[in-house]
Image (cartoon, rainbow, N blue to C red; front, side):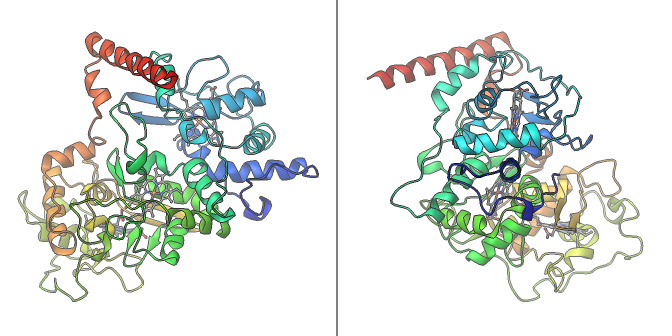
Length: 475
Ligand code: HEC
Ligand code: HEC
Ligand code: HEC
């Protein structure tokens, strides 16, 4: 993406108002740094066309496909005619220039916390630092009832806690900057906080307690030593956020790999430190089913030395791996054929950790089987600096490396027992659901199949909730 020149940007993320002597160039550089920290490009750049911020990226929501819009300063197809006030309204309130409501696929509920000064910098960057691209992106056309954008007004009334961030007096500047970055700019909550039946982020105790995210699982980020990040050192956390890889602990795949690749690796050390300072103070949330931290599972001895690495290295990867074993092959047979060339026959990975160990890996030891299954189905891709890591995807049926849902389940269950949390397991049906993008939330289920009755229920529900909320506020 943006290929941000860090030296060009401001020293650190600004919380203060721009000073009088701040030049236009400074302001644009600050806006650019913010746009990177907020990862605007993740959604507004279509990876296929690669036109920066020209939109058209398909976001598969449970309600249907939502296409991001062109936010280059193109006056025809982008936001070139937006005033700063209109820009602010779109980014913080979810209302675009023509008055229609945006879907919260645009994370305005998090960006609502952006300060006026930072909106000003972002606006300067998008108007003067971004190349206009005259391309009309694909338009969003959700089916009833989700095509009724005005129903978002009810949703906003309920869930949009719309106020720019204000530093808390009893905390220091580092903590406050961390809170601002985590809650607002880098919108960590959008992925790491569970949603309610109406798809809004939950508050209170649920905050940052971890949740399913389509096919993936975004882990608990609270300070709990067992379920959260309490047992991670500052060094490990910084390394994870800046590179996505910590030996003997975790690697970032899926949406987290995207966040590292596009955004987090470019944050200044001070800002990473601020993020960690704030994360340390998130109230601990423990999943009662967990008794050991996710990275504590697995042995350090060569427990699986009886593995027969019986496939010829020369042919591995060049022919359908299914050839190497019968349809009902055991997990170990599949592992030996499909995984051991990189993760080694004993599952310990390589000495340098480039191919990670499957023991002491949060992917296999946590409270959800999703990230192991998703890593197998969709692979791992991440680029940090000029270094890329790539684990091939074993999901696509057409690929030489395709594994069936049954084989993925068998393999995963074997790996949980061998290297991870032996309590974890996954069924073939669950693998099928993960392959298709994860379980559907209630709101989409009610309206499915786009039946009039279901639609009416959802809209009436939203309106009732809105009325109830307004009443409660008045009291
Ligand atoms: C997680 C995905 C995502 C991220 C991150 C994101 N956006 Fe969006 N944005 C969207 C989607 C999707 C829409 C269109 C929603 C709709 O059609 O209701 C949108 C719409 C908009 C609009 C309204 C444009 C119009 O056509 O009127 C603006 C302005 C905007 N985004 C700016 C930004 C900025 C600035 C950032 C970074 C600070 C950002 N977005 C980050 C997904 C995202
Ligand atoms: C777009 C969604 C998304 C965003 C935004 C996001 N994360 Fe994540 N995060 C994930 C997912 C999914 C994983 C699991 C990745 C894996 O194991 O391969 C993850 C993993 C992590 C982990 C590793 C936890 C473990 O137990 O292995 C940490 C730490 C983390 N995220 C912190 C953050 C912080 C801090 C932010 C904001 C600065 C953030 N994340 C923003 C989706 C996201
Ligand atoms: C061609 C080499 C290669 C093969 C074959 C391979 N992997 Fe990987 N694997 C990698 C690389 C590279 C990474 C990412 C390391 C990083 O993130 O720094 C990885 C990461 C992982 C992770 C951590 C993902 C996460 O979200 O944290 C798991 C689990 C994993 N592999 C399991 C498997 C399994 C199971 C198989 C067999 C189906 C397999 N791998 C086959 C190279 C490979």
